[in-house]
Image 1 (cartoon, helix red, strand yellow):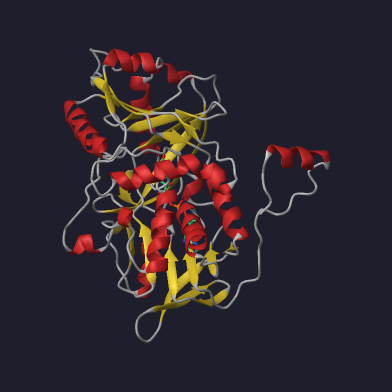
Image 2: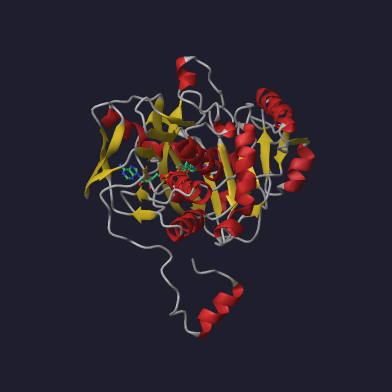
Length: 416
Ligand SMILES: Cc1cc2nc3c(=O)[nH]c(=O)nc-3n(C[C@H](O)[C@H](O)[C@H](O)COP(=O)(O)OP(=O)(O)OC[C@H]3O[C@@H](n4cnc5c(N)ncnc54)[C@H](O)[C@@H]3O)c2cc1C
């Protein structure tokens, strides 16, 4: 892998940037591999990365029906945090946040990682109680959460001028999560892709898996794609909102539902807010990008949906909530809006497991799965390579639905 550094930038600059080699190849597709990973989003690429890096498994194909990083990894609002509720979740997300902080160096690719703190604006006592409860569990696992007063909240976010004592939902205080950050999502996909390619893993874009193939014993034996049959004894499904459409082709039904989540960005403005602002009672959040745009998201549309655009009523609800707390934003022009998918399990926690089909692995149920990419890749690769569950994801199993042993994280996202 060619090294990216200031020295190489200067050297190539002197040659008018004509000497760079391609960041990843497009090799011919083979008939079989040791492992097939379906989906070149964050989780698929990170899984391939750890298979190659930690376990030396490089005869791997990552199959992507569109283009690399064109799925939800490119559609999310890049909030990275570890303020969860349950013992099963917090250490996993703490690890993922830590891994993100070192990923630029590990991948030799500038992810523009910016650790910038998330501030929750709290408007109801039930929410405050819930966040205080989270704080106590997070303390045990070394994740940061601190309560602040309303005046301190307004000092930290000067644009927060709504939510006064006479408003419908007055602000009662805030919570501060200093571990939170943001980075650049395209760079995460490209960084992983470049690294896995250099270790021999193949990425095949425009290769849609149409169905999963099982042998006469019921185990996985490969996939049917628009480019023909490809065999492997281990297949990992990392397709985000499309998990169930694929697993159903192998006769598996899963406790997952796909929902639409949307976001929009404003025109670029001068630096206004240096934290990620989350308003869980009102149902919206935002941060300011390095270009100056406000990147704004709302709550998911609760109905089952595969749409990738924004629903007008969700958009209006989010904007209305935002203007009630940030009235000065009414002057902002909005530049772009879009949607993506979340596949959500009943308890809003992920599922990473080998399924009842031997050799078929899934990583799914990622409600806020961007923050989980590094630890998700690390732990799923461990399971695929060793057959043992990594301790960090031990409870994110399918079995929990058989025993009703849920990891309830509903409400710890920007959810209703
Ligand atoms: C608007 C929005 C905002 C969000 N904000 C945040 C946030 O702030 N923080 C956070 O942590 N998370 C956030 N998320 C969630 C996060 O984006 C997802 O949980 C995460 O990206 C999912 O994992 P992934 O990157 O692997 O998915 P994807 O990037 O969607 O990867 C799956 C890939 O599989 C491919 N694929 C699908 N079917 C097939 C097939 N049959 N054959 C081959 N390939 C296939 C797709 O084309 C896609 O490239 C947000 C999501 C949305 C939509």
